[in-house]
Length: 368
Image 1 (spheres, one colour):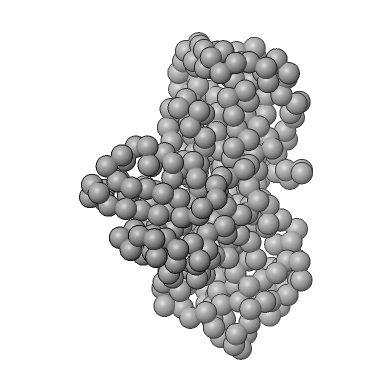
Image 2 (tube, rainbow, N blue to C red):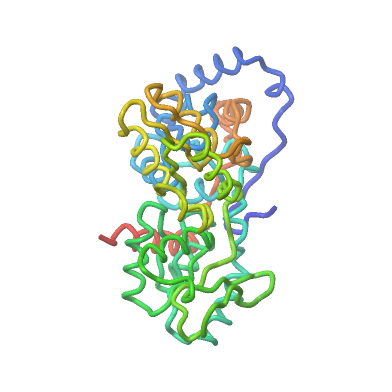
């Protein structure tokens, strides 16, 4: 896979790092952190594995972490334990003197990869021909810097799962229709909560180069949903919710809005990662929760809230496999490469892409 907006070089993880014991990894990571001191900040996404996130100076969702990294003015190096698009956003927001490093360049995001810039530009031309100047693009922050820049150049903005409704309300004040990238489910679930019927939504398939799920006249369409999805959240099903409720009627089901429409409708509640965390943490002791999101986060919530019963909605493990590519050997390699004066895996977004990507991000941050 080639990243279009970055210049990256990575050799394979040296064999010496692969053969270290758990104790050696912990000792050397701790020592490297100590030596780098205030020159270093490590950011850990909520979905990151526990043996890595223990070293994070900050944990959170992708945008929160990118903003935190930029605020650490003393830190010359930002090591992002997440996936590629997150590190791109961190570099976009970082100061000129800050270097963003992704410990393993293979830590990508399948959802972000479902919206390639060439496909989006081709689709935009067709959509413009169909609807004229009535469409504004909005992209979920789970997208490449190139897609964020595209949105910025065309008057649009980004959104998170936390503020998606507010962003869509703003966007509808600008234009009659929204092209929502790259996750169809967050777009559909949010728009439906706003009172937009499914008949006013269509899906754009980049593979077919055409509209899908057309339930009514195209001239009445308000939401054009890009055919993308999160591979983790598609593993949660209506049948799982039904089984949970049959087994324990007291169990509350809360899911992420990247889940399918049917799952979100059947759940007791839905919301962003931060919303799920706050809801469960503030729930009364003895409450029971089945959570439809990434397994590392669910297990961490269970460990940190022993007064509640917390289980994964699915009966099978649902890890973000690309996120889990960031492990202690890669983290140690990244830290020691800095100490050696030859940092590996720097994520660098080109100036023009960074400019327009930041325009899109700033528009979102200005929305009240």
